[in-house]
Length: 315
Image (cartoon, rainbow, N blue to C red):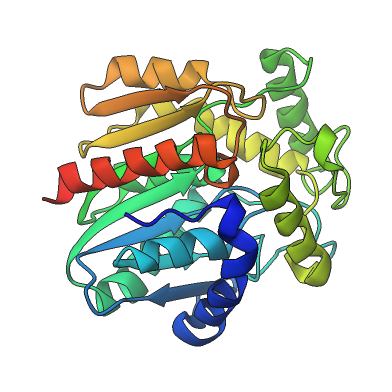
């Protein structure tokens, strides 16, 4: 397998940009509420398709390196920007506000993307790969819609979140009451428009190169920027997370858990893995939240686990 490395990333940037500009097919998918931006590409010797459900504040533009790397390894690749972020439609006048009417709207979009785009272009075996919020969306989708995925690889899935010093039961009550009082479109306490943190302060990755490239991309394309969450998003998310133990997914799942994660609560990974026999969990030492954007010492073992899992479920 080919692995994109930090040492060679600068030199490979022209190939990555060429892949993005000339190989990826990019378009918009119409939905009842707005357009979803998506892209896909299929190498000649593709044997499996990987469909990516990205995390909050993420989308195609952030995943260029990974998509190029997967394509180079002869995987067909598909990705859609979730509603409210990336190049897809956003509900509110202030485009920085993270909002969703109902958390299930995300998985309804993913189902639409899978049925109208992925299954139209690709008829072979498929693996669903996700990160963070995208993992919660993937789990919801797999539990509620008919599909033909052979398995799902969940990077640091958002099965519970850290509430930054506020007890979780209190945070849920605050979000619920704020929505009941009509503040669903207001930023939750402490949330603001997009404000990039300097690398030493970031909690996402230990890789300065990949972190700075992510921030540079968003600085060059302001429409990609997304700020904090609203009470509406928070309440919808808490409602979904409270029901996650009731969902049943019957295909093989692989949870890649970041040992030093302070964004999602890893305890939920272990709780779910202990409940289902079809879940494999691996914890990656010295890893922050964004496993696909970590330093090579973390990222490559994560991708090795992804490829091994993919082979095991699609052979």
